[in-house]
Image 1: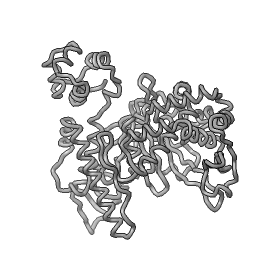
Image 2: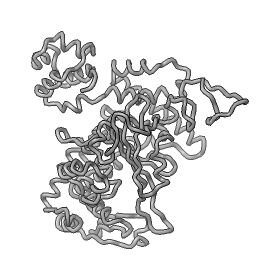
Image 3: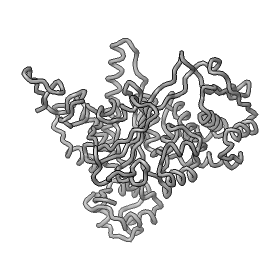
Image 4: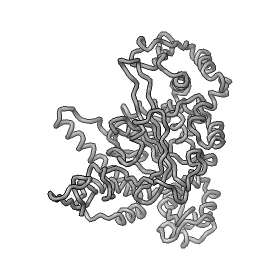
Length: 478
């Protein structure tokens, strides 16, 4: 551990979950009640020996327990108080940090309230424009904050699980054992497994017959229909996805029901869970992690070895968070050519804003200008943390010239301190890297005043408009 870990709230929450008094918990840990009281009140830092005792006595995942809850809440509250609604407030960054440290649960509750407020604004704007209300938010539950759209709610659920779902990892391993799958013949093995277990036939149909579909399950005809527009590796992925929906439906429903999501959000979660299963089937956890370490996380080579696309490999890298067998902590973002964030997962201390796009300084946008090339960049966020990012433009399958495939940028990144484990960090001076790009979360929340690419003025700063001077930006900041 670097620095002091003040984890009083987490220790208190663990004690209350186990129904223990301070005296009884202290006795089990072999420490005094007064010392435990000081830890819970965040007047003493949590030490490594204390964490080891905690892990032995209560069987907790120490890495997950030691994760920076405070950092997550600080990022959420910065987004809240960066909204124009609070432009005249006197809430400082230190106030935000103090609140996050004192009560992460209160910070989460404020973030939930803010999201409900933003959803109300979006619905009002849609009604004013005649577009109808946005998808209503699901009721807040103890497990999941309310969100504005089904996709957002699903991402919140996966983020809360650190994108690692051991139940589905075990299920995918079970399919490999039951169907006696082999890496070299995975496509044929999955076809045979679907036929043997469910009496299904797999047919590859022309794109003009499938129209805008890439996969269709014909329940009555007992067939799985795949478009020939799919690349071979995507056909395997779709077969594994269908195997999950048919062979492990009870497990998918159990996880979806336990998420607290309802309606379209729950249905979308089932699809995402089947996607996770399919990724685990193409890239089994132990073999994939071993290969990732051996190949120094070379995404192209991993794709060739496991028969997976650049996009699927990136998505799989994010899930390598099994306790005791973790990979490099990656974050992930999918971006379309209009700048919309289609998918995002925080990781390794990198935080995405829930609303708005990305920083225009970040080179992921420029990946659209160089299709097929991998863009590497070292970026620095406002708190001084640095990250190595890897981005590439990919194309989803289309149906020919009349219906071209969707283009998007897929980017992953990790703390720069892990750069030595990545092939992309070869030759980098990790202590003093050249060409570090200073970025913000997004323009609405970024306090950098020395940026000529801003779309909005820094939050809480007074604008100065001088008709006698013209800078790179249309305004000056006090």
